[in-house]
Image 1 (spheres, helix red, strand yellow):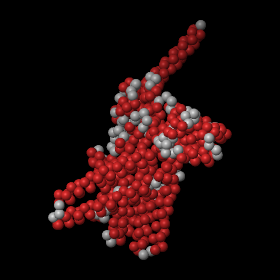
Image 2: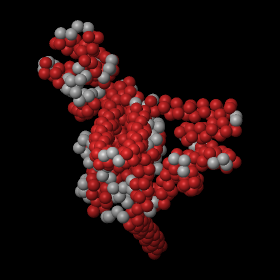
Image 3: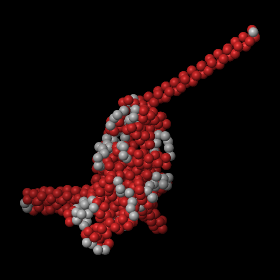
Image 4: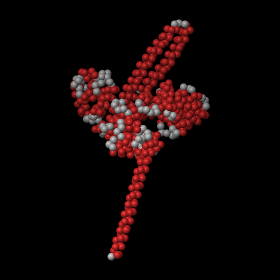
Length: 585
C-alpha cells in the first residue's frame, strides 16, 4: 500500500513539474511576442517622427489634398535616407489600419506610395502588372486615385520601352486632369514626363510646350529644374534670349531653395550660352565647374557635353593640346553610358578636330557618325505613333525659322531707324515729327507681334489636341490587334465621350450645314463620318467599334441612300468637302 502511494505521489510531482515548465515557457513566449510588438511600434513611431506623419486616427476620412499634405514627408529623398524596408513596414501598418476602419481612400493611398517608391523592392514586371490591375479596378470607384495610378502606369510603360502605350496613358491622365479632376502634383508629374520624352528625342518645340504647362500647374515645388529644362529647350532651338531668361529664373529658385548642385548645373548652361555668343573667357569657369560637378556624381553624359564645349573653346583659342585632351575625355565619358544623343556633340567635335589636323578621312567618318545619330533619334521618335501629328504639322522647323527671320528683321529695322534718326537730326528736319513716326511704328509692330504670339499659341494648342487624338486612335488599333477588342472598343459612353471631345477639339468646324440639311442621320452614321474624315479603312473602323465590316458597309450604304450619293469614292469626297463646316460629333 505504501509502495503504491509513493508511486502515485511521484507521478503527481513529475506532472506538477511539467505543468510549471509549460506555464513558464508560455509566459516567456508571450513576453517575447509583446516585446517584439512593442519594439515594432516603437520603430514605427520613430519613423513617423522622421517623416513628420501623424498618428493613424489623424489620417482617417480626409480629402485627397489634406491626406497628401499629411503624407508629404514620404518622397524619394526620405525613402532613400531612411530605407525602403523601414518605410514599407510603416506604410503596411497604416494600410492595415485603414482597411479595418473601412477607409478605402487611405488604403489606396498607401498602395500608391508602396508602388510609386517600390518599397517592397519588386521587379519592374511585377510593378507594371500591379499598376495595370489598380488602373482597371479604380476606374469606376475612385477617379482621383485612378488618375494617379494611370500616371504611374504611363511612366512605368515608358520605362519598359513601350512608348506608344505609355504616352497614351499619360495623355489619357492629362485629359482627365484638365477636365474635372484637380490634382496639381499628378498634373505636374504627367506633363513633365511627356516633356522630358520629347526633349530626349530632340523635339524641342514640343518639349517647351509641355515644360511651360508644368510651370503653370499649381503644384508647389522647387521648379528650378523645370525652368532649367525650358531654358535648355529654347537654347536648342537657337532662341538664346528666351533661354537666358528662363535660366535666370531657375537660378533664383535654386538659390532660394539652397540647391547648390542645381546652381552649378544652371551656371554650366549659362556658360553654354556665353560660349555660343563667343564670350569664351566668361564661359570657361562656369562650364569647367559644371563638368567637375557632373564627374563627381558620375553623371557621365552631362560631363561629356561640358567637356566638348571646353574642347571647342580651347580649339578656337588656338590651344590645340588642351582641346585634344578635353575632347578625348569627353569621348571616354560618353562611351560609359548607352545614350545615342550624348554621342552626337562628341562626333561633331571630333570631325571638327580632325579637319583642323588635316585628316579628311576621319573628318568625314565622324561627320557621318553625327548624322547617323540624328537620323536614328528621328527614327525612334517617329516610331512612337502618339506624336505622329507632329510630322505633318512640322512645328519645330517652321516656327523656329519664322522666329529667327523675325529676329534678324527686327535687328535690321532697328539699325535703319537709328540711321534715320541720325540723318534727320543732322539735317534738322522735323525732329518732333520723326519721333512721332517712330513711336507709331513701334506701336504697330507691337500689335502685330502680339497677334503673331497668339497665333503661335493657338497652333500649339491645336498640335497638342491632334497628338492626343492620334494617340487615342493608335492605341485602340493596337489593342484591337491584340484581340482585346471587346475590352477596348468604343462602346461605352465614357469612351465615346472622350473620342467626341478630342475630335471636336481638333476639328471644331466640321459640319454644321450637314446637321441642318440632314437631321435624320443617326449617331452611328455621324460616327462613320468622323472615322471616314480621319482616313480610316473599313477594317480599322470595325476593329475600333468591335463590329464586322459588313455592318460598316451597310451603315455607309444607308447614309449614301439618304444623301443620294452614288459610289464610295463620291461619299469620301463628300466627307472631305465638309471639313470647313461645324463639327457634328
